[in-house]
Amino acid sequence: MITRTAREPYLETHQTHPEPITPYERKLAGSLTEIFSGGATTLDEVVDGLNTLGLHGPDGGPWTEQTFRAEMRRLGK
Image 1 (cartoon, helix red, strand yellow):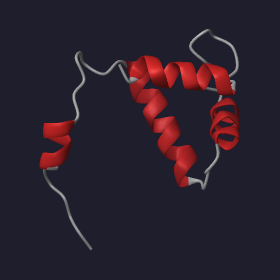
Image 2 (cartoon, one colour):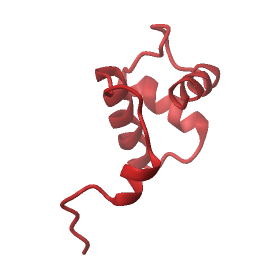
Image 3 (cartoon, one colour):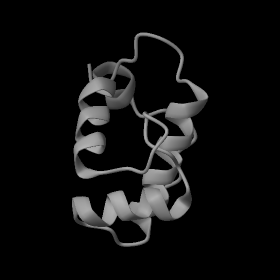
Image 4 (cartoon, one colour):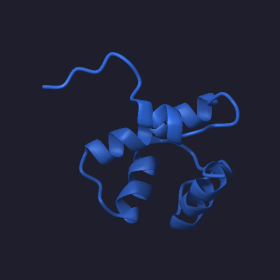
């Protein structure tokens, strides 16, 4: 078993985020972690998982494949 007590150097060097992570981004990340940990492997399963958890899309409505893809593009910039 590997125990990590500090951030991995790769993450610090190769991942950047221009501003502090917002509560929305933190909640979305936690929801996605939960969904993938539950075995989701397809976009349909991810979208269904977000809607099942009650996390609204960026427009306040339910998630769709299109809204998920657009939000990942926006957040990835």
